[in-house]
Image 1 (cartoon, rainbow, N blue to C red):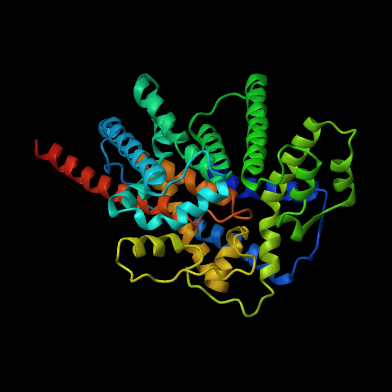
Image 2 (image 1 turned 90 degrees about the vertical axis):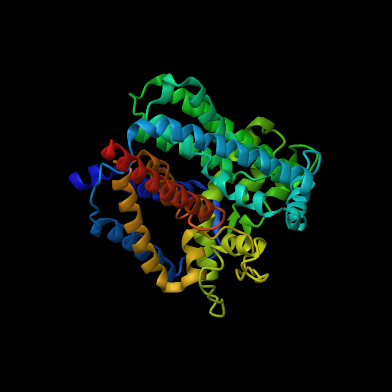
Length: 422
């Protein structure tokens, strides 16, 4: 019990992810069209087990002389500047080189983003990778209590919400949930306060806002109808999610009932959509695991952004990127994505991921710049049964963080040597 308490963030994030998945599965009024295969259950349980084993066996050593605390504020300001500049250039790339516009439908913007990607140059590509550090200033600001530095604190909060502009352009809900969990986990870990009725009320309001925005994004992106009417709900209930999790007749009757208010239908569908978003990934994985001819991609599926990046900067000679999943662009959970990449060697990957998380946990106690990575790994843990935060664009955050930490390590050594010599 003491060990669990000392590593509450790691075990708590795993448990919370499992809990919200179970609640979504139990509460959703849907039929599961395909029962769980024994291989799926064993793969998921084994993956969790190897992750925990990797975390448990590693025993890192602390070195408190890695970075002088007095320089944190200066480095934080530089980091904020880099992130803001990277987003400004990203927006230039999107609006002027790729021709995205708020007047376009999100689907068209996503198509333009892909078609005109060749217009980006090396500088814009590198800055686009650095923008993935957007949450670093917020986490560091909370952990180091930068409240007296008002401008720094305001800019740190601003950086946290910079991804929303691109999310609106492309009609994606992922950044909404990402930002919510970053705030939630950072508050729980580094800004613990007594739970009050006011804070519960504020959290409830935020959840309702998230549900509302989520539905508005779906409405704008899918363009199923001109209003939130019966046609919209009927078509939404025919989306790809429903091929695996089929709505019960009572659900269809509920949305066809003209006596039910539009507000009730709106929030009922929002709750169901979020529930499906959470629950369906494992069932999608369960569906593809039976495909014996499914190719092994050796990391090409989850880490395709790395290949894409090297293609753009000319290191690779236009290596072709293919999506081997029979379900195309439907989320398969982290387990499904890793299964496509590595099959049962995923267990070794999860073991190493557990070791890495233990290392970051210890390093975050001596170096504040490891704290955002710790939060990010916690988000990975929460979303393991939902979607793949290990790969995809999420790999940019990990790689950018590694480069940042390498620079800080070299800087820390230089500062320590200078202080010793003086």
